View 1: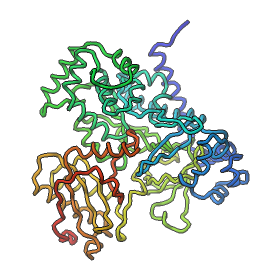
View 2: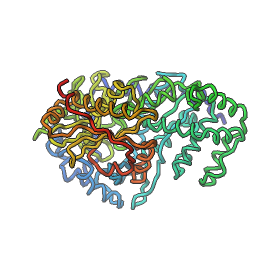
View 3: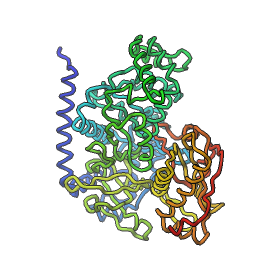
View 4: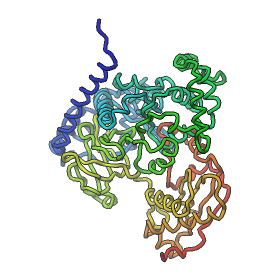
Length: 568
């Protein structure tokens, strides 16, 4: 019996990818009809469900019918139906029951159970992942030549009351990958299931460092990629010793089957260990960096939109100026876009998997805001995004703001801008995450100072914005104070209402709270301990939530010196 060779598998993958891309492009050139056909199919399939009955799906003939009969939804409005599904009661949001739940957390860490159906899992999830991988193969054939180091969370983290598994969509994507792609992974999936994330990181780093043929590294968040590098550098003696001897540190506590799986991939490799030591010796700061130990690295796959962009420069200090392939508009609830190019954050809407609606950001607070279909939104404009999918989310408000960057055919390309809830308002100023990110970036540039991590808290009690910042070590108190003034200056420039409120003394000048070194990792640990999954961890540039401040240790507070900047 003939078995497929790696070349056969790669050729089959490319052929399937080309076929899928052709269908994707065909739909993109007929956006309106593709979207209406999808909506009709969803409503017909799930019309007999409790939600469909409650909202008269059988009477829906046009989009206008759908919009008029189904109000905009959020998780809370859908939860009564979801709760019954979780108990195993069928035909609530979807026909039958979900086959899986993707879980995600809000700021409180309370889990949200996002339904996944068999149809969505095999189509929207697997298909979009294959389109992304195929476009990568077209963008950078070199990235496909070596092995991949990928960081995800476990696919299964528990079970609903009816026994249906729940967990991470990123882990599920890995489990469902095309075999030709999965074979390229340096890290076996079981390593992602190690409960202690320090031990998990160590195993990921050990197997990654032992591999001298890595061409792609991937994690949803660029801060995780930088954190891994810091950990590799901190533990470099242990890691190099294990690589030299071909062992896994005996002090690590992990299940024996996983230990054996890791150790079976290791062989004594003094040559590689010596090479890693040379990398450290040749580095200007004597650090262990991927730019040296993975010389064939072609692409880093990660998010670049929203506040993730803040960490790209820091990540590139470790990895070098490699190509970046954005993972697309991706969340537990939706895979909303597929980026087709390198070094761009935008992607084409997944119009064959999700029925999209949009509301302009400047109209969202209207009593009856106009909704726009995908082919109606305009280049350069920003919108709140709503979607209906094949797995029971109807006119779902994910509270995300996206911007239109272009079109493929008449289908928009979008980039994630920020969470809609990333807006604070103490006294009418309405500060956006993007404005805080911009003010920090400009202050860093003006003062030639580096901020490793920050969180801006809108404090109602003091009528003041407080920026909690972990600075790179070595700066003087004078430089920190100058940064505080620069941050205040640029926040006023970026938000005219903030400037007005400052001039009228309704807001106090911003204060910068200098944090002890290691604040980012402490913050991450606190968030994970509170229920946020590691792979879904994101920094929070702006919030009014005091609970986010509990892990911070403040060393010094720098008050912006005056409001003279407001005239600038």
